[in-house]
Amino acid sequence: MPLPRPDNRSDAFVLQALERHQRRREQGIPTLTVLAGPPGTAASLWRQWLGSRRQTSCVSLAAGEVGVIRDWMETLRRTRNLEADAADFLGATAGLAPGELRARLTGSTPHERDVLLQELFPALTTGDISAACRCLLQPPQVPHKSGEPLDAVLEAFEREPLRALTALHALVPVGTVPSLLLSGSGPGWLASAARVATRLCDAVPSLVVALHAERPALDTYLRGGESQSLALVREGLLELEAPSPEELKRRLAKLGVRAPEALSNSLARLAADGVTEEVLARYGEAARELEASRQEPAAADQARSSAESFLRSFLDALPATQGLFELNERTGFRLNNRPVEVDFLSHRLKVAIEVDGYYHFQDEEAYRRDRRKDLALQRHGYLVLRFLASDVVARLEEIRDTILEVVSFRRHREDADGGA
Image (cartoon, rainbow, N blue to C red):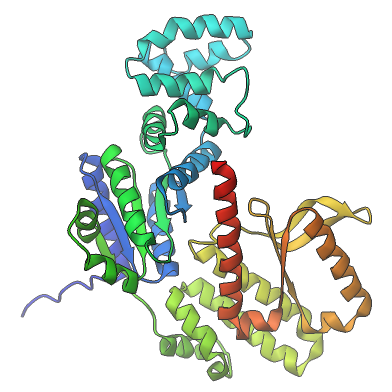
């Protein structure tokens, strides 16, 4: 009797394939992982695999090389002490004991620091690594106009970001650099992202790089002319499972949601996005609380809280919004001498999202207070979105698309400001 063929879309199969891809990288073979399927499924499996390796992740929605590498460098800056890494690398190259140079630099005067570094820099034979070390250990007396150290690094490499990435990658201990997941949409995005990913894999074969693409866009790309990028995409392609709306309806019914038929549009969106069991369970809870609030107005606050909890997990499951929003976050400014707190806040993109219960608007003073709050947020540069808690459940696709549109707009503005 023949052995059953493995399901090449199962989570277990994909996780095993990710391990095979990693072994190729460790052998110095340029390897690009391509996750083909719903974005939520891709993000969940990618995080699960990285979690087993205790590796951080950078998700970039940029289309061009400069934007992608800038995102990766920013994640590296947040997760590593780059000055310490540069000091350890330079010290090891010069034959010093581990941590010795870092200790000698700590507490030294600027003059003593310069003398010591000038003695050691000749030990670095690679020009780009030397330039990166100098930027990190001897920052220019006149800071870069943007105020960002990474912009000074890019400038030192004459705006050649791939050289900067390669040099920084060499300074950081093996296995501690962030992985990179490219995710996006729109005409031409996949072709551009595949070219960028190919250049990254060629320049630094050990760098963990993945590309997420939904199947229709991927099919179009694979019909294109042969190229190194297309060959890497085809070689690293991993198909992901996608749940059906009907299956999600059955799961919701098991979770106690009495009328899943009324949620068909939202369930179609959840299926297309490939939500995890955890996200679906939170959606089911929000749907149950919404049903209860229609029978008992006193349950409206709990329904709003459940809708918030679901929306948070949903946004964190999508590559485009993963890690962008903090729940019940303070803005840092005050209104009427009280801290301003927002349901969902992105400090980085200056986007504020408020989820309101239906009965909240029956209170005139609460309505006026919210308008004052919105004005204060706008004066501080925030774009404010307000949604009904019931719509988070019943009109999820509309809310999702609105949030993604605003996030895309803000990201494009951020990229333009960064490139100025």
